[in-house]
Image 1 (cartoon, one colour):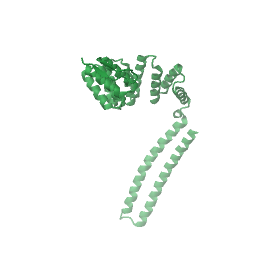
Image 2 (tube, rainbow, N blue to C red):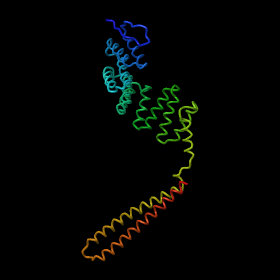
Image 3 (cartoon, rainbow, N blue to C red):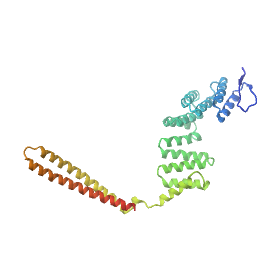
Image 4 (cartoon, helix red, strand yellow):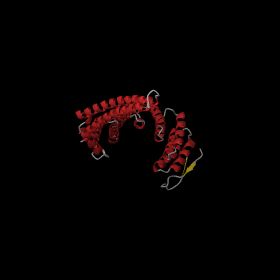
Length: 293
């Protein structure tokens, strides 16, 4: 086989003639980690000259595209690779990630589901699926996958996962569970991020008396409902009376003076009804102010 020549990374002392696919792949991966994307891409292309269907190399190329934020090219490469090897969970994971960072969460979800069919306990797919569901607003479902990831990963990223679960519980208003998970974090690392602040805040809010359960609040609610009914009824009365006024105004059977007197009487009645409603609303407002003291 013809030998190929490639310039190694900048810290190499010499250029070597190599004919090993693994060499180019390893060198490309090392360059990617260093952030030297153009050189990493050249190495990956050299590796493909030895085996154009090598999944690892295509995966490497996709990662290079992702690092350079060329999401469309990454997706294209991954879909092409999947058509060659549809049973590669790594390819499905990377496709899911590509869709995730490009904010196409529905497609990310589908790709990760393919990965989990191949390996139901694939850690990366489980974790990423939790993140995708969170972004989709499916918070309760995301917690299920975060907890599964916690079981699979064990102690390695325990604090980080516990924090994510605690924050998600806080997001959906489940204070009790959020407090429990923050407490678990504090037992591991009392200085982890803003855990202590969030924990203290949740505890403090949980200890405050619930206004909704107070007798005065219930009384205010009752007044509001009563006032709403009165307002609704007054609205109907007003409508009826104004229609009569208009009818009276244009009626030829009644003289001008009678029409004027009738109009004044009806307007007075309407204003009186509205005044009663305003008094009720003022009572409700006073009750709210007293509740807040």
